[in-house]
Amino acid sequence: MSAMSTDSAKTLTPLTVITGFLGAGKTTLVNYILKEQTTWKIAVLENEFGEVSIDDGLVAEAMDTPEDIITMDNGCVCCSVRGDLIRTLGQLAARRHEFDAVILETTGMADPAPVIYTIQTNPKMSDHYSIDSIICLADAKHIVQHLDEVKPEGNVNEALQQVAFSDKILLNKTDLVSAEEKEEVKARLRSINKFAEIIETERSRAPLEKILKVDSFNMESIIDVDPSFFDDSADKATHNTSLVQSVGIEFKGNLHAQWFNMFMMDLLRDRAADLYRTKGLLSFHGQGATKFVFQGVHEQINFGPASKPWAEGEERVNKFVFIGKNLNRKELTKSLMECLYKEEGK
Image (cartoon, rainbow, N blue to C red):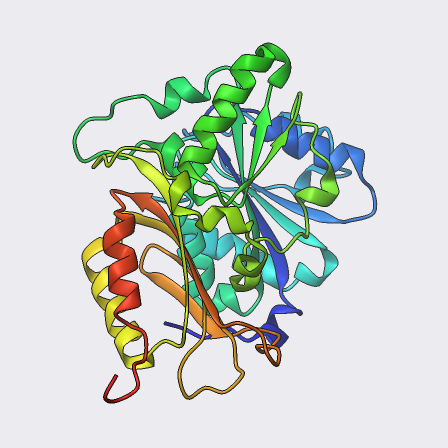
């Protein structure tokens, strides 16, 4: 687990990753952001699947000068051109203080995990940028169709992963479905990711204060999770090896640091590919009032002390969020509770 300094994070340029299936409205959202506001100066990094970047012209109309757009070619940011992302952001680093935020619009076929991994683990990136939020655009009319698509063995369902990884889901094109259909879609999205805030939009017109510079991709976001998320009685989904879902677990007590670290090492060794997002709020024996938080994407974990300690008299409640595939709440709860510190002789 790597520690992240909250002091250094304050000087980093926030980077918002926009994902979503082809046609969900990502470019329309970027245009909306650039046309609707003049307060923030934003650098847009755009990548479109294929040899030709077909969206440049659309976004360029909203920019003062076309050269402010940096286009990365040769395919998907997350796969074959990860080096291009590093080089592009590296070139932008010298000018990054001219911008309030950076937006990375990914191709509709992109899994955001490699982008997150690159930003967090490459010193040339992590010294300059921090992930501010991961926004997934979901087309209200077609998202369920994409989520239900059966992929060849060994291939991932990109739409499922995009929903699972997101901090915020923009449920777009809500004017194209009935109220009943909309509620069914929202229920399906929540079954995959209860943690992400769902914001309804038409023509990608989202309230900017809810999607830019919101710092929703941070370790301490678990502190504000809705308490109902941890209610195991809410789990009505049947155990399914291909089901992507979210599980919340909480229990009182102090954890044994060594046992917990061993549990996490084993979990990540065996299940990293299935774990899309993890978050935790922890109390350790022997650490006084220090409150610890962590969050992870696959095997990449950021861990450190929370900005505020446990208050005097505050009940020590450990909280965990797991979003992924083939999760078993009972097994996870049992394994985590075995990490509790026990007084000798008890």
